Length: 237
Image 1: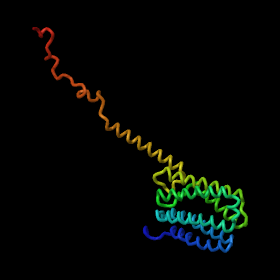
Image 2 (image 1 turned 30 degrees about the vertical axis):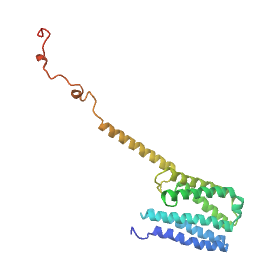
Image 3 (image 1 turned 90 degrees about the vertical axis):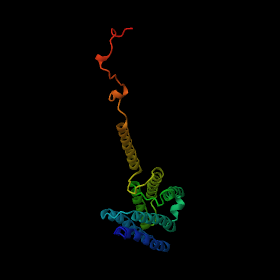
């Protein structure tokens, strides 16, 4: 079972297979079918994570497959929107370019440093994902894009991508379930404090005792009995 395919992995694989189908629908120009494909992809994205946790099927391979599917779907969706609604990029070139730049930077740093695409499942990523799906579905179903929802989704996605980028730059190892960069940094600081306290206690336990505890060795006393010591009257020339 550990080496075989799991249900969660199969759902991630299904999402990968769905991408070329949506590509064909986007070329045809049917926005509502693209919306349906995105709904199915979003459902599989939710279910694969839920099932992996529920059935205790989390694995490195599954996490990387899920990350690959998510990032390919996101990059493909950007092109689908350019095909179906070119006015979005034309009228919002700056915000789209900045958002794409931060996102691609986070992917590049993750690949160069950790050899996998960054998808840390941060809380900010969940918020951004929800807003992006809402914007995509609203635009594809209505046929026109809502500017306010576009800006909200873009800002949330910039924040999420920037947090992913900083996490990969600041941390020597990334946990895909860390939740938040602030939580990870606090945990690291707490671990360092605990380690420092442990080293201090170990150092104190190994330190030599004080002079009061080992007075016989620090200040040796005479072993001659007092009664045997000559008095002043006995010592005469």
